[in-house]
Length: 214
Image: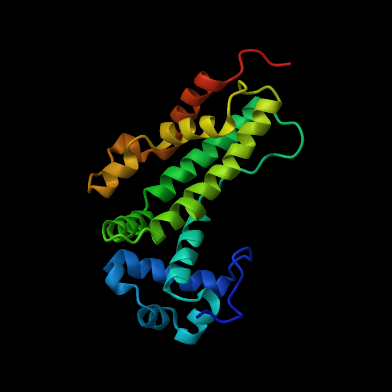
């Protein structure tokens, strides 16, 4: 059972906890699920197993923290305060798209998804649900709020914001993540994340950009 002192999920990780989670992610990439033991993490991070249990609880709590820490690397845009221009919206979406591609295509994200897929094939869907909720769900909620604000200000056509976000997400990643999970490699053009991001956002604005603004 987790200690009563275990960190709350709405509290940010300390620098020390982030360093421990980074060690756990590196172990996962290097050795897969079998390498991700509390003893190995404690040894790699230079902390005690008691500290791991205190901070993250049981193994499921540790995996949830790992997912949350990795997802935090995607800088999803917040809804901007006050009025903003269409150009500001485009810039925010481009920054989000470029960062999303880089994080999702990383060895760490691929290792987490492969672990979740492997566990799901054995009937354990806990990690997969955590990835959807704390990973894609968190990113999607923040970006959807920005799209909703852009619609209210007349920069985008008024449609369900969540629907528009799903289209944006698809335009940014296409089939890249699935291909990488299957062992494919990106072409030189696909590795130019800035250009890929600009093209995705340009296509999104062609679909949803308001034709007239007040």
